[in-house]
Length: 391
Image (cartoon, rainbow, N blue to C red; front, side, top):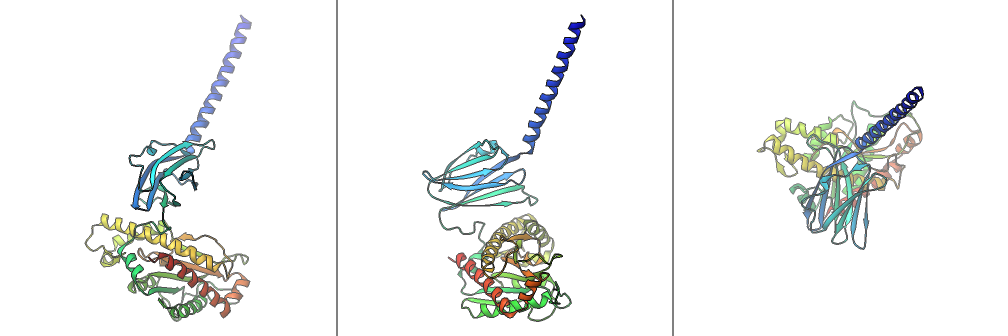
């Protein structure tokens, strides 16, 4: 009896151990599954005969990889640690370019989606953060022609393509009572930005088909929103704000280029809707004066999506050319909520030309020769961008 009782106790102890182990394994699998992103939807639309857009709706931001395969033509999208979803059983999975799609979970746990194409296409992808009405999204654009910006084109943007003269508003940062950053040698950011802007204006105005206007041509303070307002009054094609950075460490160096962040766009859209006087303005060639708040919000969102995309492409072109004459602090365009970048219908970038807190870069920025190099490089990037935008 004693032996049986001991054996039974050992059996029950082991069984309890197995149960605990099974519970841990189940909990681990559940935790792993919950840690994965969920694909909540997929939308396929034909923007034009040579452009198909695919939008993945996701529960959170995921790393992704997009590449093309041939024989036959396919586009592969790998979504890191994403669960397979019934959303992939879309009703419409064919366009002029797309014949169908397939999907499978890879050994790595990534979700692979394969688009079968009717002919060769060039893919391009970008992620969108939640904006209040939509969650995380991954946008994949499939183009059989050249890679033109894929967001909607407003009537204002179409008008700009047809015009014979491009108006570029240059905004020398700071001024007057606002000196901006101050270097070790006493160099004032407001003076450097004005010097570079004046040189750039002279270069631009010597070039046929281009005209530059400064938001300030002297040492005076101008409110940030007034700088943007001046550019919009001129119906400017581009807005370029010039700055010189500063940091607590003197070792940090290099130029950066910024475009508006999505959060900044969302907050600005809300402001435009709230301030009734803005409704008489033209947003991308569309008057908001006779629109209710919902429709106005949708129109603003469409216009800002196009503008941010154009700003990112402009910034990328400018960065490539600045990198030929100066160090780069960031090799890709950064995004932030700078007030001067918030015009909803005008591509805008902010350039940090260098760090005044870095002694070597301060010395260079003080020289007319380096100021001219920066001005020339920025304009070269702008010209390259605008040529690609023309029909």
